[in-house]
Amino acid sequence: MTMDSSTNSNPKTLTTNLLFISLLLFTNLLTLFFSSTFYSSTCTPTFYATTHNDNGNNNDNENNINNNDVEDDNDLPPEFRAATSPQRLPLGFNRNFDSDTIHPPLPNACTLFPSLLRRYMTYTVNGSCPDDELFSQKLLLKGCEPLPRRRCRPASPPNFPPPLPFPSSLWTTPSDDSVVWTSYSCKSYVCLINRTRSPNFDDCKDCFDLNGREKHRWTRKESGGLDFSIDDVLATRVPGSVRIGLDIGGGVATFAVRMRERNVTILTTTLNLNGPFNTFIASRGVIPLYLSISQRLPFFDNTLDIVHSMHVLSNWIPEKLLHFLLFDVYRVLRPGGLFWLDHFFCVGDQLEEVYEPMIQSVGFKKVKWVIGRKLDRPNLKEMYLSALMEKPLNNSW
Image (tube, rainbow, N blue to C red; front, side, top):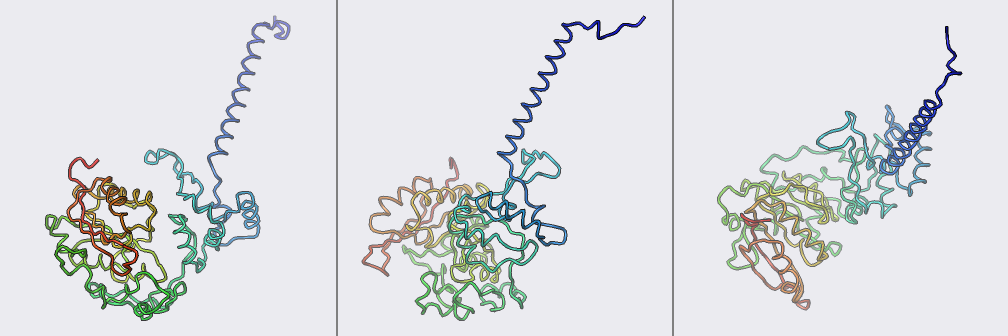
């Protein structure tokens, strides 16, 4: 004998089932709400699919999508958003990243200058980059650092010559054919060498003349003077213990060249301020770093034997920024490493009232400390400081 289940239902069981179904539906809706809210607030869609195809061309549909997106996102160029948006790791969660996503660096200052950013980040994907060195350097100097990556090929000289062999490259002016000159007032190295007589240049005017003052920098010993020689500085350490270092704002890298002649590897930070400084440095066979003084030094803690800077670190830098920079120098130096502050300049009582206390607060030990008058503009009462300092071997934190 069979029984009809509809006529023998237990009211209590039915009520329980309805409660369970309601609870399940509520939790699913709650999960959907939180997941969609979290994803939309933390993840920006990638633009690889809308800016790239297998043939390397952008079609009209893609351009229409990108234009709509730009209007909805503060008019930021699509390639900028593609370069800086979060990107999912193809193999999922990675323990080294502690994430399944890579977040490329996004300097806040980049978005503060949309016209420069738009010019820098507008190009044909897989094509040629615009000739925009001046605009990219302006972005960098305004704090858009590091510059966003681009998917285009920069211009190169049409008849690029093979590099000069080492060591003759260290003291030889390279060929004009090694430079793309469009961004500079001078269009040849002869012009750069002769720019000491031009009123259009006000910084590093004689840098490119390798047979002028560059030929003798850091080689002359001057007892008790502001000009320390490299050999005197190296003599303060155990022979061979100074091996790698950094020169901040090193012009055409003559300091690095002098150190390489002594088997020391120095990287030089420099910008292209109306001249091809980075290209010139590379042609000499030493390494340029295209960085401003605002960027964190790209080295791990306690790694460098020496950090040097001539003229660049001075009172034109805002005090708080300079304080951060000095601590960054301290960070990258190994215990016992040297900081050579070469011809730091300031005015009047600034050295005693501001900069000496600032430098001492960082924690360096004085090895040499020489103060002198800056004589080219006596009415301004400018002072020079040349100092050699050491990061303590013990208790450096």
